Length: 447
Image (cartoon, rainbow, N blue to C red; front, side):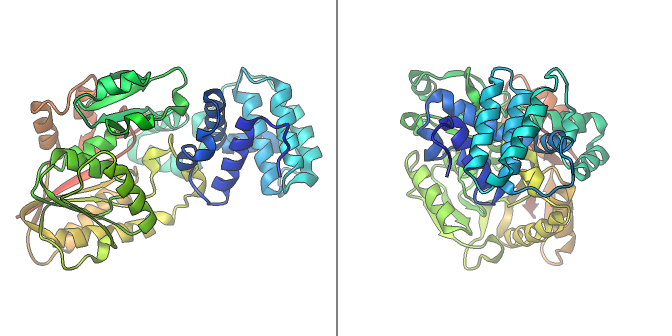
């Protein structure tokens, strides 16, 4: 469908953005697909910049382009809109892209797409965008739906909201978790430059001139896994147990931490989606011993015939608003009414997990969401609804201090995290305030 004259990086970027727009994948997964792996390092980097940048600034790009339409409310074909967005992003935000390349290849792609009839309009609009000054600064808050911005200001304050939005427009930190003692040496032999993690001893941050497209080389996967430090911390907070349930396990990053910390434990790792669980099985089996692990396709809200467990991780499906730097399309897909639907499902999973907890056992409830409806409200509703048995919420600050005494937590961000990352016994990290994605966690013990 596309013209051969379009550069491979732009061709791949257009294809990925179209798939994202049609709900056929998320940007993070598609940017780590075979299609992108086959590009040169330079093209892979450009493709990643185009995809993530276009998604991050989509609302601003649409507004800039529409002011040059005779009818700003005109409904344009999906592919014509895509050509405008990718072209305008390069023209407005990328200094090293020649104007003729950004403009010509966007129009050329449009000509060979389902928006071909609008190629002339795309050409005319992009020429006007190209004449705009590149020195203008855009407000990061304009790149988010205003209902999101209003919520974050209400819950976290104007300054924190500004920092959340700005971080979401930047490249997310590329962090790995070390899985073996010789991991530093193994990664270094693959040409990676590493820095210590911000607050975890087993974390490393990758330093790379083209870090936007960094991947752990296949030769090094037995030594490390790509994983945000916030995600690693959540798994560390569950502690040690003999029988462990990972209720919503895929894609398996936290499961790997549980395995690393509890090599002799019996672990049941469940997920509702067979394909995701099989991918997780392949990934874990390449790095770890799964003799004591059962991977089961199961709905975490309907688990029966198992337990009790002394440790349970309920890392529940959520809106993912804490990962907007990595998954910028979330802001375009998410609607306010989705919060209530997610919360209902989350309450079902947490309630089921609490029933499977042994006396004295602990359950960690977590999300990568910044929305209170999915976090503290879920925990409070579940604990309030229990009419039999006794459960107590524990203060995660105490667990964090224990991890520091053990040397598991250390680094430059520890003091800031201790001072601002805990409230009412919960852990809550916020992008822009803490050097990781946005996570929430609550620890519950059965009495």
